[in-house]
Image (cartoon, rainbow, N blue to C red; front, side, top):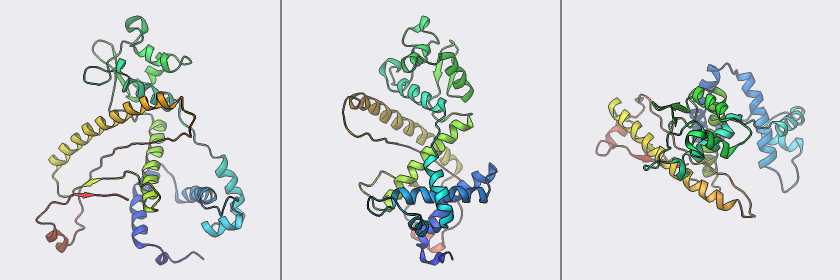
Length: 296
């Protein structure tokens, strides 16, 4: 028998409900049913319990995992095997494209006087190393620049200017079109954001940066202004961190030390405000507009 929901933190349950709603909307829109999701959840429960909740250094028994997860022991063995064999697949356009974009937005040779990615001549015969063909060749000799360019034009990552130079769409770090590419970034970015917030809630140290600014009494015109400002400042921050990281990586490659990965992300969201506040809450805020910095 499943435990009563009342034994869990009501605040945590409410937060999980809120966090899951947009995911359920996405799943329903893409035809993923509850039955299919429930099987995925079983696999993840077993995987995480087996990896993160061992007693000492010994592998968990099926009985222990069943106790932790509430999943019947007859399913545990099958699910454990599947969880260990479930390897993430990174689309090739993502792995190669990320390296190219990182170089184009951080290497001084490819930046203009405003530290923005230069429009690049298409071929080496036109611009030497500082060309789109030269850029691709500097990262990989196994793929032709024409193949990369065709894919980037399709995805909306690049375009031609009036001089037939290749221009990087700096707003398109997540491709405009390719669904598999967008889904990869969706999963990676959402995981890392959730992982940071969950780690902070579990009081694992050191705490991760996880902040937002929240207002709910704005007009559509103000929302537009803030959206444009957020995109501009956000891109500045992303480019600055990317430039610093690529320089540090050049030095770290020579060090015989454990490796770590990092993600620094920025997002913006808006929707019509709902009248959820009571009159008492409205009155308490009448002398000062709401400005909340949140951290998990």
